Length: 106
Picture (cartoon, helix red, strand yellow):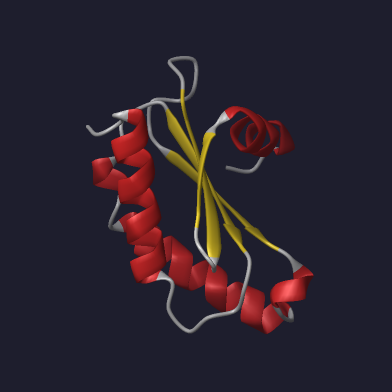
């Protein structure tokens, strides 16, 4: 995801699941593009540029494993709250939680 409209729509109207490290926003709507889309929000409070880019690479890699679990027409926004060396377990738990809550499994 790249457009601010997409981020706003997903964070304001989507389902939300939280952990100590991440907030996951999840929106499924038939008017969205057919391939699942993912966006990241990593504020400066998490760390400097190098840290934020490292986190973004880790999350993109971790999220790639979960794309096949998502329905078409889905947008996911991941907001990072704290700097951590590994986000995979938190991300997996949040995705499972939101899929269970919404019944949005493919």
